[in-house]
Amino acid sequence: MPAEVWYQVQSVLTAHKSAVEATQIHDHYLKGTIHCGQCGSRLIVSNAKNRHGNVYCYFVCSGRHSQRTTCDRSAILIADIEKLIEDYYQRIQITPAQHEGLAGMLHHEFDQLMSAEVEELAQLTANRDRLQHEQERLLQAHYADAIPLALLKREQDRILGELDQVNRRIDAHHGEYADARAHLDDALNLLANCADIYSRCDDANRRLCNQAFFTKVYIDEDDELRVENNRPFEMLLDPEINANALTWAENEDKARTTANDSVGKGSSLVRGVDLRREFENPSSALVTVASRRSRSVYKADRRPLEPTVVDSRGRMVRAVGMTQTFLIPAQVDELVARYQAGATLVELGERFSVHRRTVAAHLVRRSVPIRGRGLDESHLAKAVELYADGLTLMEVGSRFGVSQQTVRRALAAEGVVIRPGGRRARVSA
Image (tube, rainbow, N blue to C red):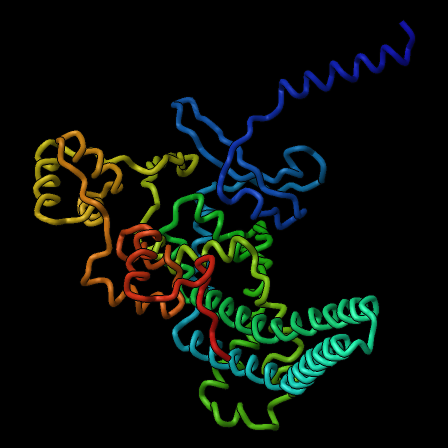
């Protein structure tokens, strides 16, 4: 066998052997977010088992584990890193005073930016009117046989192209700032409740929160965190901007004087920040977390109970899924009686700590017919009010434990105009 062929065969065999002996993959909601503060490599999960069968879960530096770096970062218990992240959320959660100051100052900055573009908007509107008038004159000239059809078509195509560009820019003026301001409110509401939300989240939602707030979190040797915040939280958590927001709130009149405004660039309180860019295109994780918060998904505590064992090596952490609740016959009897008395599936689910589908399954096994789920008349006025305030059909439905189609039918019967695609109502400038 030629030497080159022999080396190729050996390479393939070595690759297959490496694949068979590959390290077992362990999943955790912090993977991909946390990194070694010494070499910058990602931290990976390593499960160690003692002679008694107890499993100890650690995060270890992937650079040291694979010997790609000279890092000597020691392993750290996963439970300790989880606690560090939880404590960090406690530190960044803003107070009501900070929330009010940031919201007031940044909305004021948006007002300044929008007023600076009034002149451009007026010019765009004038161009649109001019093009539409030119269209009419061309048609009149064609009807009078003053211009041939080919010339009419060419000129109409030109005018339509210019009109399309002008209309797009006018729509952008009206829409982009409104969307950015809505995303600003979502981000501030999350910051005002982030620690409470994170403490109640299950693993999947914790991963989502971390993706929304951070790009990377570095764990230093002294167990201190160095955090790279995601947009727009890097700006919202800036100490200087927070200090300026509190000053603005304390002395609002002075903050709104001409001396403190730089038209088109924002005031000196947020100098160097492109507010529209910060808020107009939020990450998908941020949009999802904000939507779930508005739908009260995070009101219930979804953290699983984790058994803890302590010995000389430290604390054992063994992740378990969400606990399953089994109802005894007496509880099922009570559940059936309450449902027949008028209680809803959602109310019974909350009372007995089970999912509403589990409630329905118990009722079916007892041959109890399931009532059609509709929006209660006592909730109708509130549902109309919430929808008018900008909530989507799904968000309104979640408030009352019904589907978005049920809300749609109820609102339509009341004469409410349903927004296309379930979009939020735009904030009027």
